[in-house]
Length: 297
Image 1 (cartoon, one colour):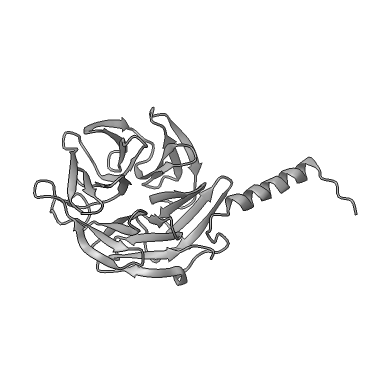
Image 2: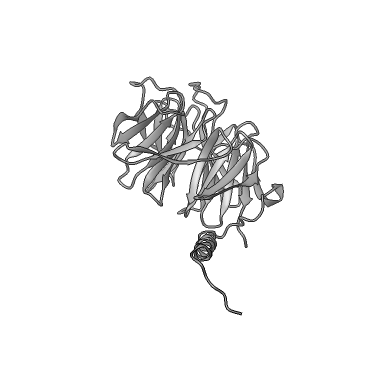
């Protein structure tokens, strides 16, 4: 039998081929994960808001909200846990007497420094020793709720302020307002490795994600289902987002979106173990972090 390949069929074959190749990231995309995919649970925490995986040490850093909000009570801390979910030091990072942690949130690693967003500014900690190396004070600004932090290849930091719908830039020790009057308050922020731009997760009911470049040019990335988005991370072309509106971790790439995980609570700022395709999901209200195995092995 002879088959005739029309232009329409050729497009379908090419699309399927690209889809199969792009989905080959070692993750099971065929089912919605349930609690049977939880391999480790980290308990004994105090309002865990964010998780950051350190691939060099193969450990997780967990920021503890300890009551949350903008309370200046000096009780915040960063927990260190190994890749199997065992806490190796509960209060690994606490800040200094002059610049203590109050309610730490989003984190980002550059070199040997863990940058942490907090009530009054951004802390820097040595990832090996836990000692505080930097504190960048935001008190000259009318800050609302500093939430998440990311860096470019030159070490310039960008910080979201969910309370005032702004993004700040930190170049060295100089802080300035980089973006303001955003349509939706930004929560999570991450680097999109495919475009080289920075992606913002919308809070307060927004569903449109925007990205911006180092020149401050803002453009629409995608409009997704779910809502009240917190942590966002990429693996290849795939975007993972924590949606608190429906307690889920969603996965998105152009022309395709689905719920990957139905979480056991409202997920905050997720962390990804890139060595094993594990997602660490913190729950502020439940005082725990669950580590989910989403690999297809």
